[in-house]
Image (cartoon, rainbow, N blue to C red; front, side, top):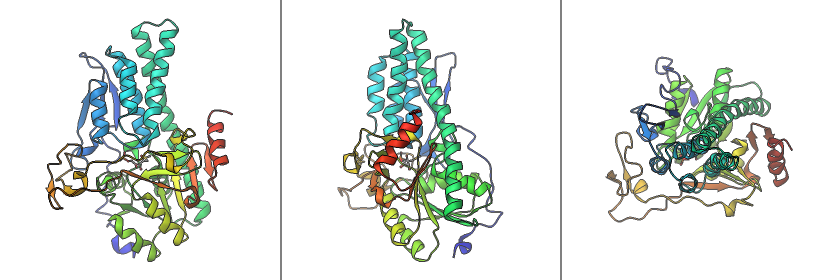
Amino acid sequence: MADQYAQSSEDIRPTGIPAIPAIRWDEPPEGPVLVLLDQTRLPGEESELVCTDAQALVEAIRTLAVRGAPLLGIAAAYGVALAAARGFDVDEAADSLAGARPTAVNLAYGARRAQAAYRTAVVDGAGPERAAGAALEAARALHAEDARASAKMAAHGLALLEELLPGGGHRILTHCNTGALVSGGEGTAFAVALKSHRAGSLRRLWVDETRPLLQGARLTAYEAARNGMAYTLLTDNAAGSLFAAGEVDAVLIGADRIAADGSVANKVGSYPLAVLARYHHVPFIVVAPVTTVDLDTPDGASIEVEQRASHEVTEVTAPHVPVLGMEAGGGIPVAPLGTQAYNPAFDVTPPELVTAIVTEEGVLSPVTAEGVAGLCAESRGG
Ligand code: MRU
């Protein structure tokens, strides 16, 4: 079945990573700025969004111009540095960035880390300029650490795939977007698939379109195409028939928050995939940096799941979903006027459905509270 959907080699024109990085700090003569690749305009347009203050970044986070757990942490850290460099109230900026979206724990982690670096510098007697420099240094360090973590996760993830599925020919199903667009490096789950592709082991990447905001169709397919991977797009509700046809060897997803008991919050639609995977005896693998683990969240029920606006479901927008975050969608209605939608951005998969969690520290399987605590201790050198 898979080969029926294979692109011809002419269809796949690898053009490399995006010309514009997902995020970069710049210092033009007018003052420091944070420059984002505007993900709401992909894949049609690679355009930059320039943030001159934390409030603009908060807006970019809410509208998903910048998104995905690890990148949200990096962005928030730079946002605090931006506030400091431009002389705004750093605590206020850190609070509004940390609270811009509730589920991805990396967001608050990044904001608080840069804020702490700033405060420590102030306590140590630094003036505003040097303290701002300390916040920027913290953001840059997080950015670089995430790139290193991404490379390590890819290596651990591929080793796990080789162990579970010896002989290559991996047919991997993924959900949402977890590549270079969400990371200081090549991503989380997507980085594993990419490494499998580079090793000649990836037979097919099945890409869930990821309703309603189409992160799979717009972003993962874009990254897969640019990397010359053999990929096929499917609607989320086609996944069941794909499992039933025996076309999926493993599911690889990222995470927005991993609770202390190993529950995994990720893009809505992940939990049904975990249920399908268990029924069909297919490994369900979560790939995330240790910064996504939140020991202060005891279990899945304690994870706050972001609820988003109805219009994201009741309207479709065209051509490149340019109005993702607007109050009134401005798109084409696909439901009667006034329809209210249930639109959680994430769902929670219980640890017993997760075959393994892959982090930069290694592979945790089975997923237990003790194992999750151990991962965190290891990453802190404990
Ligand atoms: O709403 P989004 O697009 O920010 O959701 C992103 C996801 O759910 C990703 O799968 C998750 O952040 C993991 S990315 C490494």
